[in-house]
Length: 160
Image (cartoon, rainbow, N blue to C red):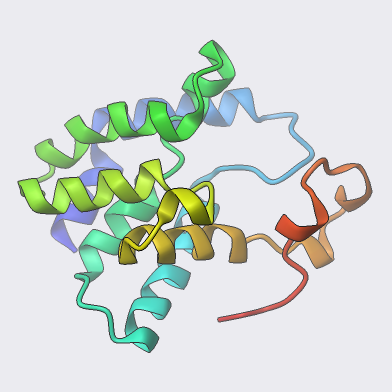
């Protein structure tokens, strides 16, 4: 998990997470903090193990830790966070020692994590999408009634 630890120590990751924390400080809905990122990583890795997918643990964690890295940019510029995230994550991944194929796989997952259609048939993108949605405990959320997520996107069960 050496490369994963390089991600969380990377100056770009730290900078973007600090910006995001500041921008979401008063947010009453789901936040995109380190707890969320690690929950997504763990759920995605459980899915990889349960489904017997040939995806390395550090690749799963790399994708999960970086899947919302474009959130601050979305708040600041309006660019969707999946698209901004792909642009930001590429440098981080390369700096942290991920090879070309791994970068491609992770960047596809980041770019496809917002919908089933975008995830397509890419295994990492699919488990990242499902883990991201599954990480939210909508059934216990204090902001449930005012949340603008459509009912079909809300998570009312524990899946993994």
